[in-house]
Length: 139
Image (tube, rainbow, N blue to C red; front, side, top):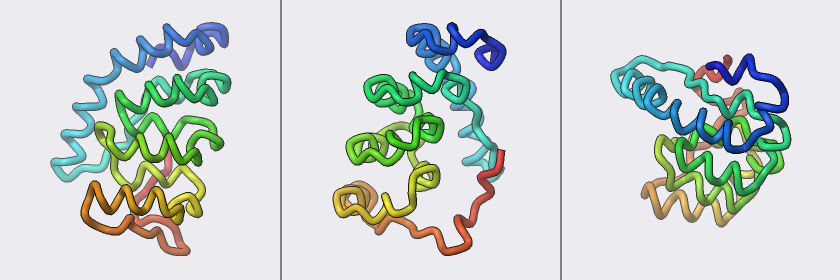
């Protein structure tokens, strides 16, 4: 995770962060296999270390969630709660309803989001009770 130790100017360079995320894809697949095998693995991504400017760049975030839906968790709150981003992320690799845990939970009540989720997955979007989700999302 070399981007973690990079300078601020490198973390703000769209092409460098894009390459880091693209090249990190194989690690994410390996972690995903472990998760499907029964183990829960918290996935890290270079997106975590991108600059705040990139995390709030609509086009960049949209592109990065196409590599892995979990990149959404490191986008700015404004973009995590964006309906168009939410609609797009549901069709991406590695999407689970848990991806939305990093958005405002009220976001899950948006009719456009709930209808698309039901159409894609033939079930209602899960609700996360007052005590939060039933999974450990701590880092």
